[in-house]
Amino acid sequence: MQKPQDFSNLFLDMNAFFASVEQQVQPSLRGKPIGVAPYTGNTGCCIAKSYEAKKFGVETGTLVGEARKLCPQIIILESRPELYLFYHREIVKVLESFSPFLRVLSIDEFNLKLTGLDQNRRSSIKMAKEIKQAIRAKVGDYLTCSVGIGPNSWLAKIAGESKKPDGLVVLTLEELPIWYRSMELTDLPGINVRMAVRLRQRQIKTPFDFYNQSLNNLSRWFGHPGRVWYYRLRGYEVDEIKPVTKSIGHQHVLAPKYRNKISARRVLSKMAEKCAVRLRAKNLWAGGVAVYIGFFEGPPYYRNINIDLVADSRSIQRVALKLYDECRSNRPPFKLAVTLFNLQQCRGEQIPLFSDIEKSRKISRAMDEINDKYGANTIYNASMFETTDAAPNRIPFGNPERFGF
Image (cartoon, rainbow, N blue to C red; front, side, top):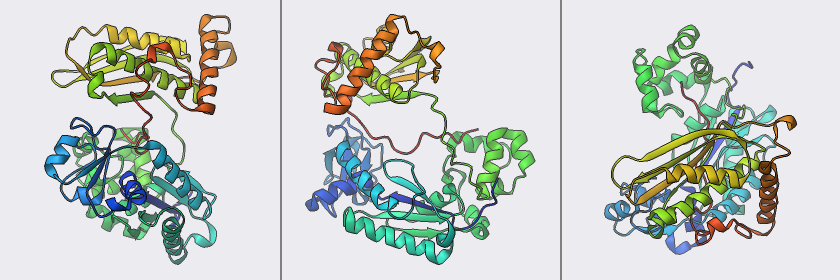
């Protein structure tokens, strides 16, 4: 493993990205509290908010109705994924002009690997300032970003997230003890409340305690993840390997008109089809399907089943709907989720070439190609009729990479 070096990574986080894009294209919204939600009704959920709204306590995940109580003057906008993707791609173009070593971490987060003449304090700070200026000049004058520079991508992220909006912070190996003394365990990217509890059980109460633990202790207590954390905390690059896709899922809060068993069933069929499209795009097959139904009150419904490997939409929809139909509750559904698991890259001899499944997979592939060329929902299964506007494409936040023990 290569020894860590300062100024090796530049992390860039677009500030309040979705909200800032809306303020970029609608100047009348600048300086005003706005929220972005898939649905603008009170039961919708804010997926982004401007800094003006944040001052009133509006956070990502706040229900629209609650946001309106916290900030009566807030403007709620329906999300526009295509618009945000357009600006994302323009930002990527800018970053690629600075370095060929770009990693896109999410819709609004990026990492640049710094090498050679750029790998020093003066040059890395100069590059960061030039990137900020280029984004404002070439993409949008109202778009700001926070930049962190550090020994590895994880520490660069910590630095970048320490000063928002429009920050620029350098974190060096020498400064690590100072930073870790000033932080809580849950301030570390990848450490949630559950993981923090496990650490405290080992008398690791702060990031500084975590940093001071030996490799032997962390490996003995937590296995391989403990070993990874030992090196991550010390600036070694351990997060560049792309994780294997373990599951593919889609979740959706139903619009009011779909909050009945019949309409929700149709929406679920569409969601299963979308999961199948993503499965085929990754050249994977699924060996399991899970369905979740959430309600306004009472416990949710969850079922999963292992199946023979499939990759066609029809088979996946059929299994998902069977699991849905097994729910006997008469409560109106509020939220749905479909997950494909036990994913495999199939070798040729594993694929059922002479079955109806393979025929259905080829039909599904053909439909994918038509929709890719002519636009979503150009062709779709009859089971999705009347729900083509439901469960629209959404943009996920962050990377589902697992840091856990």
